[in-house]
Image (cartoon, rainbow, N blue to C red; front, side, top):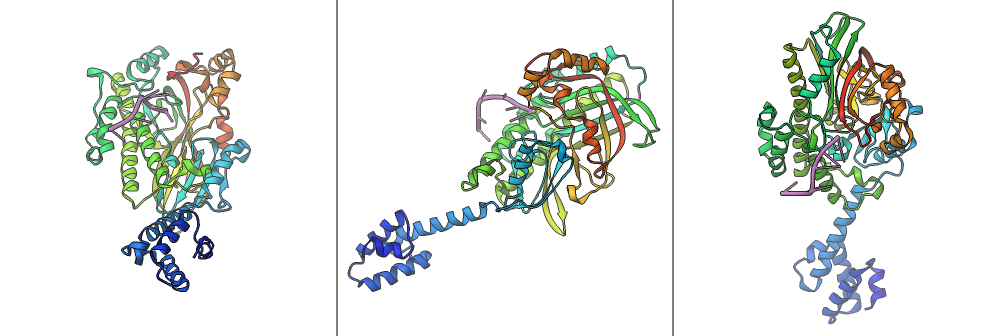
Amino acid sequence: MNGKDIIRLGLKGHLIGLALKAADARKGLSKRELLDELSSVIAHPQDYLDQPPYRGLAEELLKAESQQAAAERSRLRELPLAYDVWGPELIEDGARRQMNVAMRLPVSVAGALMPDAHVGYGLPIGGVLATRSAVIPYGVGVDIGCSMMLSVLPVENLERSEMLRLLQRHTRFGAGVGWEGRERPDHDVLDDPAWRESKLLGYLHGKAAQQIGTSGSGNHFVEFGTFRLDEPDLGLEAGEYVAVLSHSGSRGTGAQIAGHFTRVAERLHPHLDPEARKLAWLDLDSDDGQAYWQAMTLAGRYALANHEIIHARIAKALGVRALAQVSNSHNLAWKAELNGEQVVVHRKGATPAAAGQLGIIPGSMADPGYVVRGLGEPRSLESASHGAGRAMGRKDAERRIPKADMRAYLEARGVTLIGGGIDEAPMAYKRIDDVIAAQGDLVSVVGQFKPQVVRMDTGSEDI
DNA sequence: ATGTTC
């Protein structure tokens, strides 16, 4: 009995040494008997776990088997599943490549790419992905529940200086920022029992309470502008109205949930192709999958509560109630039925657009945004773009866009800006009208919002 | 998008 005999049995690596050691302990047997016994151990290792000479080998064989099975479950398809792309001429190759990787995941069943698509972590921004009994934390993104809200207000001739004052007084921007002391608002979402149902959420409740009603940073904004309805809709007559539009998310709370569960998912898929590492998923039926789903849906409600507080503060300061309100989440996963099967639809920077469903697609700080109604297109998994989409990265924008050009762009459109930075310059975004035109089969336009006074976080480069 | 990681 030697190493070659063992290798002929199909064993590799450290298993060879373990088999030789076991064979040594059974040296009373003939070579034939020994080979038969080893073959039996290899075929049925679970039967040898309590037989001392073979125990170590049997354990290692079982471990190798389960690792191989795990690798098999993580193996990417050779080719991506087919998916539709809206406005392909508007989409950079990197976003296509990311979507192709997503469509090779063994859990993927369908997908689509929206015309505002650009590169993100894991799934591209503007990516829609349906999976079977799995949820991908980075298929939702860092800012879980990131969303839009529009309030149409019964006010006329609101002075620009008053808009400016209201935004200064009733919104808060910046990383880590919260309302202080007696200014801190309250909201039912903070009493949601889900906060007590996991250690992570219990820990995050304090941060959520501290930051509620704030706007954060990046592309988030609160703005006053005019909302134009060409036809009666939303319970309103056709006409031009004063409106408030906000883009906000789940702040630090959602970011920490996303970070935590992405790490859990990555640990659970050590064999996943490095290309798809950021697309690691959680089985929906597992404890981790259930915990993520619960935390994600809570973060979604929390994000909408942030908008509600922002809009309520402004309406209260004006002494009015909104005439109409529209809102939608564009970073979230939903359970849905696809071809008679239960699936999870991830929208990472995509507006839900079921037939008749209202949504908001903003342009940029100085370009119009649109209230839209979904057309229920199945090929887009009932989705549309979530905005114009970035045409250049933040660093690129800082290098390439002269401040004077941005100031001129704002001035030409009559937009007053509080905060903001070159990285959020309108020229760093795709043309919203091209993006809207590219999805005429996904949504119909209900009304147009034109920004007048915009507040954002201070960018890395002041303008 | 968040803010130095329960």
